Length: 349
Image (cartoon, rainbow, N blue to C red):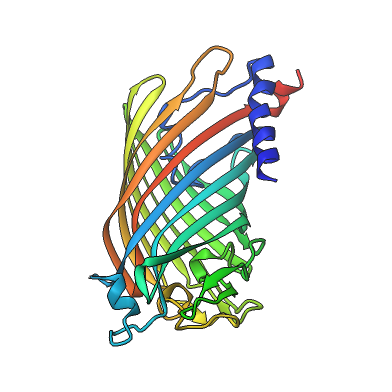
């Protein structure tokens, strides 16, 4: 399914190319590509976007202490799990659309497709490994952005909406047991594709332009208010971001960003999990607090047939990680993005 969506999004720029309808602005007119819900559109403006987000994780940590995989699976150790995760990567294809209902209110739709893989070692030894994976539609987010206050060079925005439970919460794959038997088992929480609950979302943000520079911040929360059909709900999630950007010329800017994230522990436990299989399936080992630093580039095409199209990239790495229980550490995240905005009135001229 994802390949057909990609083809559709690749055709969108061709519509604009024929009419030269792309909207042009400063390259830092949008926040770093890893941050969403940072800007609004004028009445009748439509923007399509695509992001590819690659996240990589490896090694184990409990609180701020590094834990060896051998310790995690040792029958005489502190954890006594049957298996331990070795490394994991996740690719998220995020398709988005924004529409300016009027000059103060913009609607936004974000549709993610996920592809996750995790390598696991057995208690029998580090060379005894297998891989599990999950892929499919994640949770769709439907939100509205309201312009609270605007000055010549600054804006206050509020973003509110809901997380829709469109992602699967009972994805299974073949797991290798200590006996060598292969069993079709429910994967851990981090390998699932969605939350299974309708979750309210609220964001407040501010940005200001200062000559060739810009600064901004955003705080956000996602609240899980009830258990899903599998007898648990994910932890509430809070984010705070501070960023700045500097314009090099009409088509390029670079940015730096600090992001703090707090995810609370899971409430309840998945009805189909065996807790001692490995830590990703243990409900008490899920909450965390992280601070990441990111650097990125925003590129905008100011003229020609591809006028108004934006490209961006951002690299993010952790500078502080604290885990509530035994979990895999974050290594890095790379986000690549494309954005294209135009006015519907120009399209039909």
